[in-house]
Image (cartoon, helix red, strand yellow):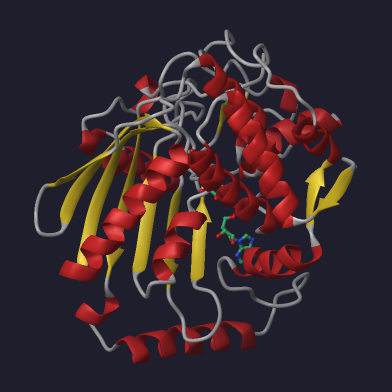
Length: 355
Ligand code: NAI
């Protein structure tokens, strides 16, 4: 088992922010990234939490992120717009884009806003949850680097292209459903590699495109639910990349190959004001009724209960924000150190891995 330490959220925030500033990021942007990563770790989304700081810091230090981005807002219609991110740090650019989209949805009832040219934006839950806290229904999706074989193919073409949804409810935090469109995230392969454990044969393929149970042989991930996940990840790329005139499919920039290069990624927000369709109070009440009915559903063998999407993340969040967040000791030691790496990533080709 990986050794973990419990870190108070404020302390974790300070450490992340300080490291990113040391790498060259401005304090306000580092603050935004730190808030996002603490949210992810507290929610149990460790694949998109503090573990990523080493990578972000190296890309910042190497010039692969615009430190003083000229972010501009282009209104293209009553409910549509493009936010030009100038390849600023993803979490910061995406949050600016979200705030722009929220404003537009509150004004016109809906917003479809593309974020054009940003770096890795992290866990999508963070954005859709914020919008739902403002009583909006939110959908977001984004491109990621090619590491997934298309259904029936044996070469990587798409990224893990995630999609997330959130809806406001009567009591408590919004319902949030957020997933990569692969069977498993790349982080789970890395985890199995570090423990020398085999993986199920439906997660990934080797260099010949054959299903593999050896995590060290993995050269591509598999789409979730066969052709259905494959179709979904394609449409995510179409809507968050191609629609914005950005590189798509296998042409999307690699996360780890050359950290001096800007990423030029795309993200899309679709926000809907439920009040333009129904009464907000009854809508939120219906969500509550649905949750109650799901909770009352007889559980299957091996399960204690039915959880609604995002419920386990919210339980984690409520607990860890109070009690402290479990963080891998190696990550904590790195954050406390003076180190900003310059040689951990890069030069490994298109498949996402550390050198
Ligand atoms: P996951 O497989 O851990 O969870 C997917 C969804 O299923 C979540 O909404 C979760 O709450 C729900 N869920 C999990 N267990 C459940 C249960 N027992 N009952 C009911 N619901 C349950 O998520 P995944 O696919 O590993 O994605 C992790 C994160 O990675 C996401 O935040 C995603 O946005 C992010 N991501 C970001 C990328 C980027 O380039 N920015 C690329 C790929 C993923």
